[in-house]
Length: 138
Image (tube, rainbow, N blue to C red; front, side):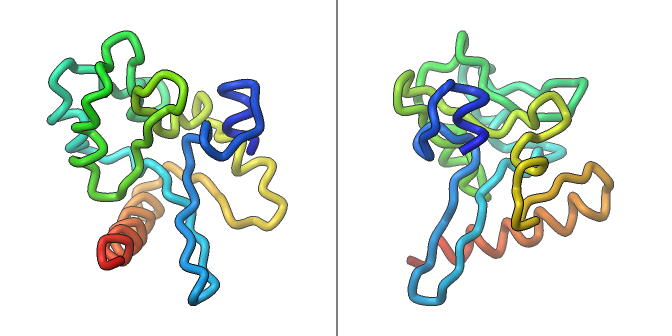
């Protein structure tokens, strides 16, 4: 909720840049978060160049001024991270909150964390790929 509140001023999962994939039959909930790929397929496929990397944080974001809502980045992302903003119909993803993600600071369960170290990134991407492949089986 902190994501939607800090970015949109509303407390709504629909406006969050992090989505939760639920498998109720096995009691598992997994956050789907942009993996900030080194060579992002979403940036390569974007026909307008709206998908960009913020140099200071490394976050891959959608520049709303350039996005036409074609959803190419959604289809190209192997992790299922980009989502459509319910109001603008343009894609959104985690922007890392200027390098200090608020969700990791307020998560009382300790389920979310952020690290920019290489090992943590590789581990996170491997896990995200497994979750994405499970989601595709459904």
